[in-house]
Image 1 (tube, rainbow, N blue to C red):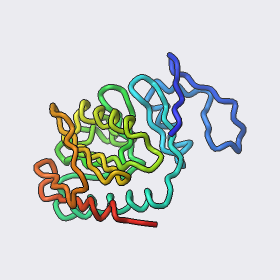
Image 2 (cartoon, rainbow, N blue to C red; image 1 turned 120 degrees about the vertical axis):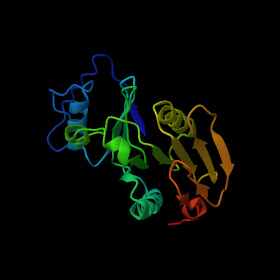
Image 3 (cartoon, rainbow, N blue to C red; image 1 turned 180 degrees about the vertical axis):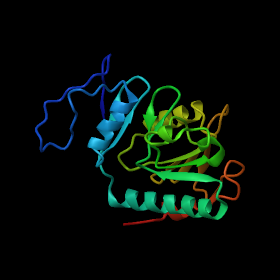
Length: 212
């Protein structure tokens, strides 16, 4: 993942040709979430995040194995949600505007119906202006672990009730809950996500054991 650091007022201008992959309209101001949303839509083949201090992180499409794990992860969460109807889920392209101003997109997320009901239709038609109740980040072989740990702490500090950092490279799970230090689990077979997600048991070892 490469990082582009922006200075105030976070107004970016790139003289890209029409056929270049990364596009930015000259009038867009990255400090405005509406303009940042437009920028992301213009470049929807990329995964783009904005930090609380205005840094843009641009991630290229993942390798097949990571994509395969992401798909299975989202399937597990989606099946549980269909059976329980307690909220809604999103996959890795879903963006969330956090209270600290960052815009992040976890690999999988779940938001309760009660919290979604507090948003207007206009707020739901873009990046959701809240932190999900539950998120999962899945480390790929090119991700730096310290950067992911910082991101997990940001999720926790901005209102996520339960966050899981899955690391297939070391077969570990870092579990984050509010007001506590992360819990490190070594090669667990499953993770019980109760009480935040009642009855949801994530088959971690199945994800770790996937191969190309």
